[in-house]
Amino acid sequence: MKLLVTGGAGYIGSHTVRQLVAAGHDVTVLDNLVYGHPESIVDDSVCLIVGDLGDRNVIEPLFAEKSFDAVIHFAAYAYVGESVSDPLKYYQNNLSAPVTLLQVMQEYEVKQFVFSSTCATYGVPDEVPIAETQNQAPINPYGASKWMLERVLRDCETAWGLRSVFLRYFNAAGCSFDGAIGEDHDPETHLIPLVLDAISGKRDAITVFGTDYPTPDGTCIRDYIHVDDLADAHLRAVDYLSKGGTTDAFNLGTGRGLSVKEIIDAASKVSGKEVPVIYGDRREGDPPQLIADPSKAKNTLGWVAQHQDAHTVVKTAWNWHQNPKW
Image (tube, rainbow, N blue to C red; front, top):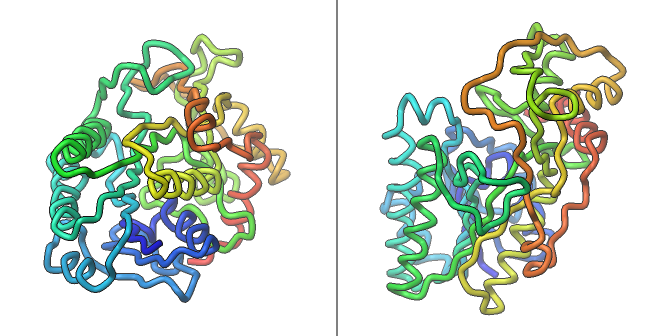
């Protein structure tokens, strides 16, 4: 298929692009490189266009030239704290800009859309593990902007037949197994790279926010899913839509949780070094547990996370952080 991948030079996007190319797809990446890295596009067959998805002068010529079959949409801002302090930035980039993209898709009759959504659309869950049937009540503008775009996509289905898959991620983690591409955010907020930075001396210590949660070791539990498993889910979503699949949402996670302390212990064992840790108070708004119920993705897409243990996930990240390519 001819695919447009927005945000394809980012963390999850670049891992997905590699798998799409390996599967034989013709891939064009559109990325404004605000957070993406052109070096992460390691396949020469991929056409990288530097530009903004909300700029019709950029995207309309692309659709006219390429005759895309489908769009995979990653491009979004994803810092929760920043979304609270600067909500309009998030609604502009995560909602308004994709609407422009959808307008062009409608004009060129491209009716398949894979959306990189998030478990943040659920807010504080009513129960754990979290199924797709749970109420969506986001508690920050980041989650709200993703939820709103899901609603826009459903309305587009009613209006002009767009079929979409919403992939609601839990905690993306790890790096490619061959070390060719990895995770590099600025600023960095993800637990595993923060822990590895502390081990490497790039930061003084890792702060653990809260040790008195109602969990076995007192620290928060999250569902860490390897980035290559996330990429595989996007390939399966493309295949699902190409075979006539209807608009639907799927939670992507392992179905099991790992605590902050378990991640720190795994990092210590992988690196052979002690992790400098500071223990602090809880952060407001951090639920004790966020774990996916991934059974729907298994039953409908045939997708199951293959890399579920902390050691494997952390080891791939450690390999990258020891020898980053950019």
